[in-house]
Length: 235
Figure 1: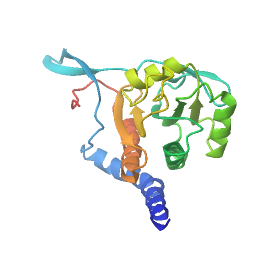
Figure 2: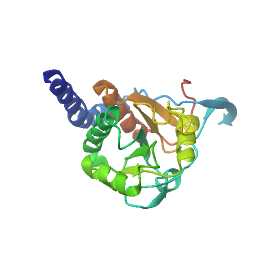
Figure 3: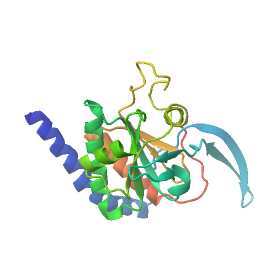
Figure 4: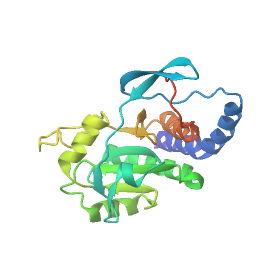
């Protein structure tokens, strides 16, 4: 019990306290042009361009396609279309889960608290892997349980196969096949971050306080990133 309390203290301290400090430190480093930006994932092509008479090689990365789902308020939404200019932090869960899901969701709540003063930068996204049971009402009740800000954190349900395809193919997350098998409710305990162009920028262990802190810092860095094409480190 004492160990769990210590871990929660470390987690709350690392994110809620150190995130505002990160803004300050990042601003200093940015002034010295020493920022180390989060990687871009899933390179699909290299393109040679000419700027000012010089040849540059630009990296083209996979952009996660849109998906249409319904949030906890019963509103039909599209993640790309309706959340333009926002960084997304995405998790998968199901409301009847009694093991990892509540812990991950609670840690998403830590992120919500950390970005309370800068909540226009990021949108938290929780998607059910059990939409047959997780109705809009169930997702609303789950949201209330974790004190969700309905504007800044969507809890989504919808078409089962669309959800599984999105998680498995678009985001490359660990998940079942969505075919009704015994592994359907198996899903990753990671968070995935998408930038404004819907390029994957990182995967983070939601129950690791240091990884959660890294996720928060990466969101800040992505928000500060210059909006222009440039050569990037390849994952």
